[in-house]
Length: 160
Image (tube, rainbow, N blue to C red; front, side, top):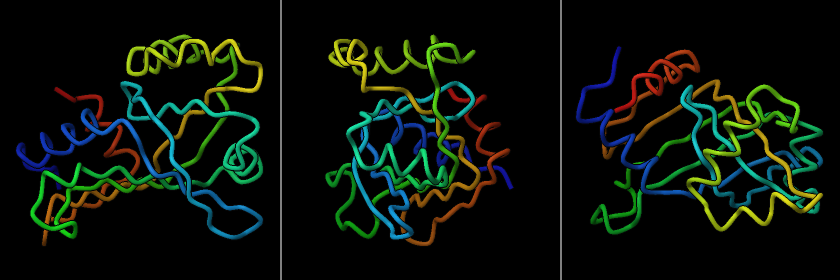
């Protein structure tokens, strides 16, 4: 079932206003959480720029299944339990400089994070693209919506 217009607008607002996600990876079979800035490709894939020195990068190279959580700021709700939030499960894949989507991914990331430009000159930083396979959007109490990866891509392709 498609999301109502106001719910869709809220989802896009959360994604636009919150530039940081919690990233969950598997570290030796044990869940590990970290934080990553992200940008969005037009098809809904998330662009992350990570260091080879970070544990989560090695985790994604070993096991590409990841989860990300993006939450609205606390000031958008009287209680943390009612905060709008987007939980995405997906596959993280490297996006090397010769990848067809690298130039666009880099441009989108640098547009969102202009201060990241010097990091692209460091040899240990690289882009990953996270392809969501399942998405859950909680717009508030009793307002949970589950989306398949295909439904997410369609929703993002028709973003305002």
